[in-house]
Image (cartoon, rainbow, N blue to C red):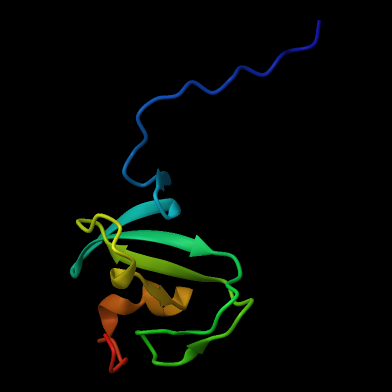
Length: 99
């Protein structure tokens, strides 16, 4: 008889696993600048300005959206970052004048 896949049991997820938020699926990251909710964006439809390098993130470019983890979902606190800029944010200061 063929083996049947067992259904995944719901349970608590670790801090490093994605979790649902009001903004979609996000993970929590801790760094020297605090705790952040981070959500990957496959391809946005608008042009955004990355606070890490102050360059545009053009439509269709995969990137991440980050907002403070202690925030309760304030849209004004979300920032769109190039993935590389987000990953290196601890090694340099934000370049954007709007940050």
